[in-house]
Image (tube, rainbow, N blue to C red):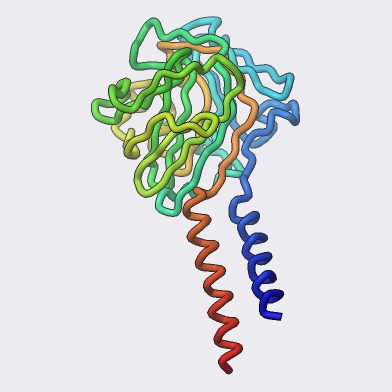
Amino acid sequence: MRLFRYCSIMLVVATVCCSVLQADVLYDGSMNSLPGAQGWYYVTSPFSGALASQSVGGGATRLDTTAAIGESAGYFSDLPIAPTHPGVGVLDTAAGFALKFTAQLITEDHSLSANRAGFSVIVLDSNAKGVELGFWLNEIWAQTDSPLFTHSPLEQAAFDTTAALTQYTLTFQAGSYSLSAGGSPIFGGVLKDYSAFDHVTAGLPYDPYEQSNFVFFGDDTGSASADVKISRVELVPEPATAGVLLAGFAMTLIRRRRTTVAR
């Protein structure tokens, strides 16, 4: 009888585990629709005639800004006058979370600047702190916040971003981040504060680096370009955090059981 009750508790814990680790899918390329049809905002540069192109097929979106190196375009999880992507809630670094995304670079050109990338990923938490990652054909690296928007000499690693659609995991926990690809660690560092960016001087209507709970994918610079495939984006709780929650939940159930028996 006790074994049955113990197994019942473990079954409840397992059920909670599945619930806690349930991913919020932000983009699913297998639906063969563009990110704009799945809660994202597609924005192109107003300065170069919107030469970027986007298409969907084969389970992935293809974003191409190579028609002009000065072109930029990408997908925003929210804009100042628009609702936030329904799958992006509070990105609490203290609690921990991970952004998983599957992407493949076809080509990339940053010949105008060694501090820019044709494909970038930005994630900012609930305090507008986070990281911007730059993707080259043979390297992934982080933008520093001091000096602002400079290729980090420490937070970078050689990596072939062209070989295949690769699942990257960008994990945030306790004021830091770490990046892995296909389950293998690449690099990490402390969260950045990019709020020193002057959007007025840059000619932008608002400052995306002061947005909280923010995610961006695409080409965000007029000094680089890329052709990239994106097949999936999802948010999941940080596994260690989920484990703590589950352990606490299991102990609560066991304590309640012991209290009931004692009575």
